[in-house]
Length: 386
Image 1 (cartoon, helix red, strand yellow):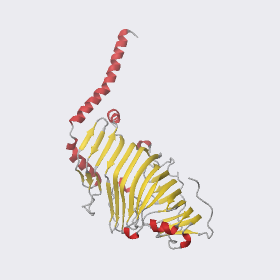
Image 2 (tube, rainbow, N blue to C red):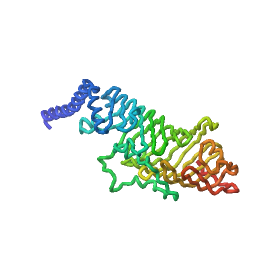
Image 3 (cartoon, one colour):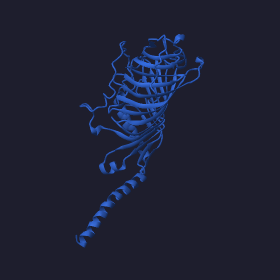
Image 4 (spheres, rainbow, N blue to C red):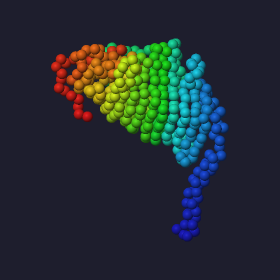
């Protein structure tokens, strides 16, 4: 290569290196001079037109470049016509969405890297006529088949679910172009409220905190979460603090929790006159199918109240339960567990069940838990070593 050629080659390399920098500086300058709050009316209109509900942004809209983060302050989505207008269907204190700058500049593609939600609250309602406030929102409706108008219960139970049945490639799976992923998801102080007026109950999932990294459909990732659960048909308020591997399919219909461990705290109203019950928990796998409203559990371990158990079970969930399984018990005082956990055990008043060891079958159908058979001579079998 001649000296002149080398000179022009170096110039060309320099130009090619400068072009991306110039593009970035131009983009940076444009971002700094744009007042994104001026786009509030347009954003509100687009969301309102898409959802059929009034969308209002009360907080500010901000964009930073390093990292490239789009943030929105306090915002709310109103209820559809026919539902309580005083309670928004969705509200949040703030959201921060980190985007890939290079995907936007080089490929003109909007790629979300991470999401952080603060104070998200979702209020779901079904009135006495069976009309709900989510069926007209496809993205939300697909996530909520577990809330039927009437839950059909089979007294014969159901067959166990293959734990990996919904995580293998198949012809109906979405294409790679529809696949989604996130580097991180953070939720702080979340809440989901369900008001079911047709079946006359309320369900609340409150104080939800969640942290997860490297989320991707059809692949496991670790989730750390704590939350509080209460159902109006039960006196129990249950607090969970769990770390688990988690996997979901592309359509967000099937979920697999595996290799989890954590702590469960059960609180009852004052009139029950019992202290909080603290249980440690771990397990192998729990499969949830929202479409069929089915659950399968493998090797759920619970320890507390001076005893421990391991159980496997499968069945249907919803407004009524139809679950069957087997358990291994060690020093379990069933009347004590029934009293402190408010469990509808058939044996709750039977002193013969105060120190149970061995293997049993059990079922939870409707409003009663039945454990059988009772072994007159306690078994020496114990749970597998943890």
